[in-house]
Length: 234
Ligand SMILES: [Mg+2]
Image (cartoon, rainbow, N blue to C red):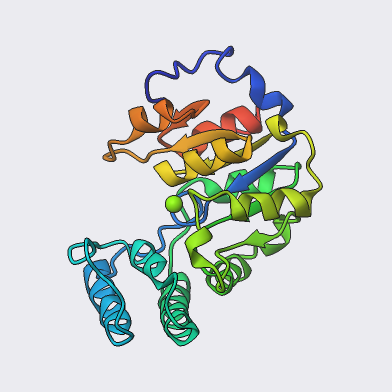
């Protein structure tokens, strides 16, 4: 457990009331681009947008492809279509070999409450990974990836969370939690009015920041969540 969450029963008392869990995909479910050259991906995506005369000011060193994809806003539809198709293909390629996050299979397979994915990644990539791993049917709340027509509504915008809540028919938002690993996840959960569980594997340093942004708890390993949501299983 990462401070300030102490791991006491009090910290986790709310977990017993959680009625649905949403998973961010890249990080909590799998390590999507592990071993991939994300710098090269960012360069290639910039090249596509440059071909459509996009304003790339401030993005020349950016390594996050999603941040670059946002710059399609206001461009002709052809620019968005080409960039979105290219990135979806890269995400599908990565998802085809991505390893599950250690411990997440036990958590997903053991939970009996409704689950959903709320992610900035492409629906096809998430669907492909979960299908290959035999986990797709566990997500009765559906897969809610980025909107390919409006990718600028990725988290921290709460759009994918709102779609998941609608699909789940969840009206008591405080009893729904998102498990995520980024500041955008925390901000989107707060905007949607749901609880947030931070997942920060060892070696990453944003646990304090996620707590500042409202994380109920921050964990370093999925097994910590298994212990809480599936007591007696380990
Ligand atoms: Mg993530």
